[in-house]
Length: 217
Image 1 (spheres, rainbow, N blue to C red):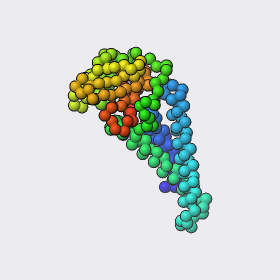
Image 2: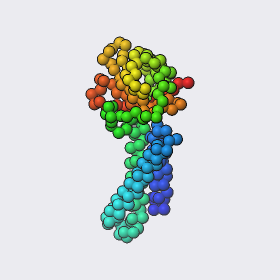
Image 3: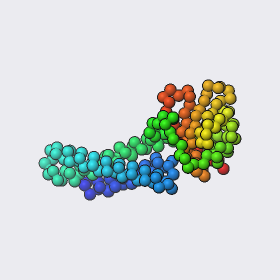
Image 4: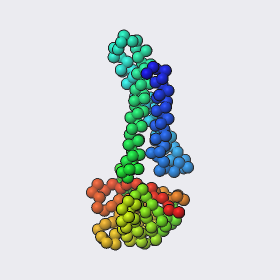
């Protein structure tokens, strides 16, 4: 591939990476200034890394003797080529992260202990105390102190009692197995549902997972 075609290729990869990264952060509410700031900051940071890494690696590889070409000629090829390679790595990482979230239900967020997760002071959780909701794998019907969960694939139903610790935190206890306890902290509420951190007392690693729960209309 000629140098004239390498930069357009790198630009196309950059656009693809931007779209994939947006999908990765789609669970954020981008109507909020802080979340827009996070997305833009992350993208600019990774773009800077791609350019610097491509430049450094391209220059280093250009020093390798190859077909008697001059250093400047080799740089024109190696820099966009290596920049494209770094962007491909980013695309692969974010693409795999989306796969884990959609297929495996694993959300690659920073690992925080459940006890360290703070609940924003300005959210109103009363609107999600009762209602019908769904996650990627489960249908949820909750009426204040009772919750029924139905597995989307198997249709298996589980019934829990709900104990509200405060306005936005509650504990689920299975009516069949008192040792099956799930703790939930709601950290975001919007008209379409809510976002929460969930942890089971049976988990060994003691790290919660983040779930986006949609309201069923």
